[in-house]
Amino acid sequence: MRVLLAGGAGFLGSHLAEALVANGDKVVIIDNLSSGLLSNLNAIEEKIEFMKGDITKELNVKGSIDLIVNMASRAARKEWETYPVEIALANSVGTDNLARLAISKKARLIYASTSELYANPEVVPTPETYIARLDHISSRAPYDESKKFGETLIKAYEAQYGLRNIIIRLFNAYGPRMRGGDMYGRVIDRFMKQALAEEPLTVYGTGKQTRSFTYVSDTIAGIMLLIKSGKNGEIYNLGSSVETSVIDLAKLVIEATGSKSKIEYGPLPPGDPQRRGADSSKISALGWTPKVPIKQGLRQMLKFYK
Ligand code: UDP
Image (cartoon, rainbow, N blue to C red; front, side):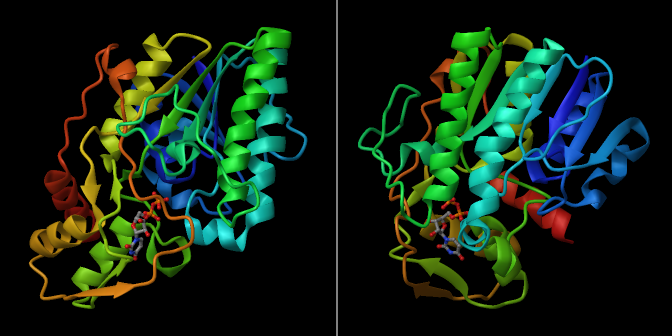
């Protein structure tokens, strides 16, 4: 296949690009490098085509395309507070442009959506059928509302123009190349760096909030499986069934790194979901099982940092 991968220089995008290349697919990456890094593609730079470009602008992609994967969006809380307009447009206008391109190329479109659509769910583990109430003017809204509208657009293109598509709702993927620190703020990267620097681990709120942390190789295996065997028009959750609380995560990071860091509590960011647990039985029925438990994933992250 010749695959157009939007956001292919990002954390998940670059791992997916490597998997597609290993699978023998031709990969064309479009990325505006707003949060992605060219160095993420070092291992495959000779084997891919790279276009620096913005999916919210006119797209000029030459040649045939069999599959378009849209992973082009900033995805971290601190980013959606700093770049809300870019994020809102990437998932709406950007998805519109890619859907039009998919129709004109007769390609299938795979859309990386998010478990953020479940907000603070009353049903956990949360299945794909769960409908949440989102606050459309909260600071999180530019991300979750635009991801939601991206899904709506894809369904509209499916109904009106027969767009072949799969929507994947991702749950807290983590692994090498994820960006944390102060700008991106993703918890596992922050905790690892804090522990390695023997600084306090900054737990927000009580730390009892949970996430379905999913190691990147499991996430990518799930996406590759859906590319191969997913059913057009379907929505799939993709996340570990194991919920880990933030406080337990902090303890596991301290254990994995052998750090002497203490835990320090800070305010919970507004709208921070209390529970996030994936019901991934739909993709599991296709044969997906996550293989990397959190302890092992943290050890692999440690090797990456070293
Ligand atoms: N979190 C934390 N300390 C940090 C960064 C994040 O306690 O230094 C918490 C955050 O409030 C949330 C969880 O960790 O409850 C996961 O945060 P992340 O931004 O990684 O993912 P998301 O909230 O988007 O699921």
